[in-house]
Image (cartoon, rainbow, N blue to C red; front, side):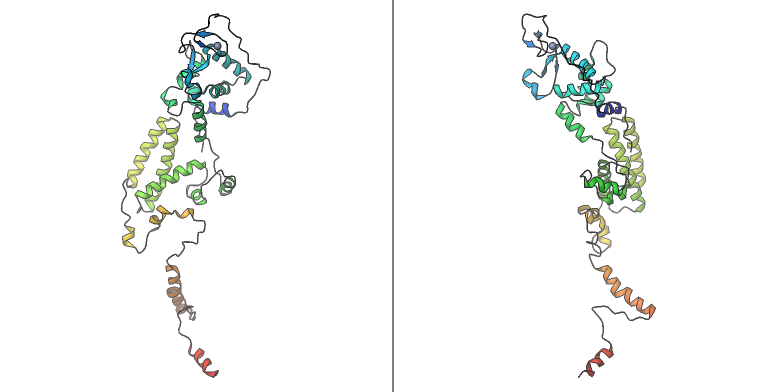
Length: 341
Ligand SMILES: [Zn+2]
């Protein structure tokens, strides 16, 4: 499944192999403009100011917490450093920015990078980026470089599972923990995380609708697909996609005649024993490695074979196959015994 979004350009640039211009030496000269040292000094050029706010950038990293939450290099050095890093990374603004984010504890977010490209005049690219990461659409995901690590981990694009063999290969590397039954239920072509979303939603719908018929079962699967689309749209801030999937979900749900409150699993009252749906809620069948474990657990199958199928077979074919446990011995068997005496 394609996971293209307009922020892919940033991701591609970040994931690309680095091209380093080894001729570039980062060099920012020391300032001589201020002989009298003021309270807030730039740790790079040495210039100093009475106020921090307009001369230094803010950071949420705890490494700067006792510096009033400001980085220690001035805005001029910050911009200068950024442009030299771009040269070092052979023109990659994304890699330069990502490097600075790690150094100064800023959150790196694709959307903020993309939107900060439309630089407003009078503001540097970095200044613009720092303004963007404070906006809700980015800040809801994180604030610091540590959050970047977590965010990237949670949003890593996983390998799409192509087939049962491919799944086995991924499992052997510890890269997937979905079962073959789940793959068979949903078909191949999704990454691991999508199967989990599909399966969780499926279980939830089945829990509230234990008595659904085959028709509804088809609808339930459609709903799981729609839920997956919604989850993705939400993640990618794709409002239109989310609304579309949402309205389609509502329509399908109504059409299917499903419920959102738990209905009584009345199949229990109608038949002897418990239904697979009930068992499945607590111990889903797909998790059993030994598939024979609960096959004919009540010995009903065996009973039918021994006491119904066997006599019918004898009747039809004129054979005399006997039950191994309950049978009346032939009179010959008794006579044989008499002869021995
Ligand atoms: Zn400076």
